[in-house]
Image: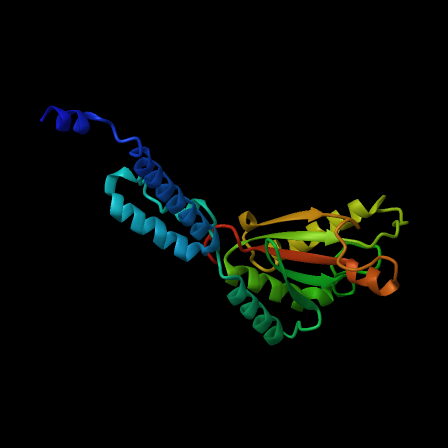
Length: 231
């Protein structure tokens, strides 16, 4: 009996393996979840957050909004806005004057210099009304914020009114913005203007064709921002 008691009192030197195995299992599960979250889209991530909240109850904080809203809100769907924009441009007769291209911030409605201004000027031509009507309708339909951006080529401007391409590009952006606000009903809290001179080209400035493409006004629909209510 004494020998058996001494045997039972001896500590098992391999018990640490059990704890180590549990730690490795938890670590593997943690990194698996982190990898899965990094690979899913917003909808799936929202489902994950919802199921986690349901499983853990009050231990997961809830301040009235899903966690997903603070991660990567997307409004509205860029593909749907693009389809709507192309359709509205074609229906308005502005095809060939207003072009559409994707952007990291959303969608760009681009108008060349010839459609809006005389060379070296920032006064919007009356013939631009069809294009601006289409652009304003798209902004209202999308229900998002937008930036009106003026761009030039790299050739220095030489007239008495504008001392630099910075001034010309900014004046053109604000002229288009004023038209959208005063004549086409775009809400002022939804739009802003900026001038970038020659420093955001979409083509080479080494050729006449490239410089023509760079002289433009872009209206950038900020589709990754929250909905402000469509007008």
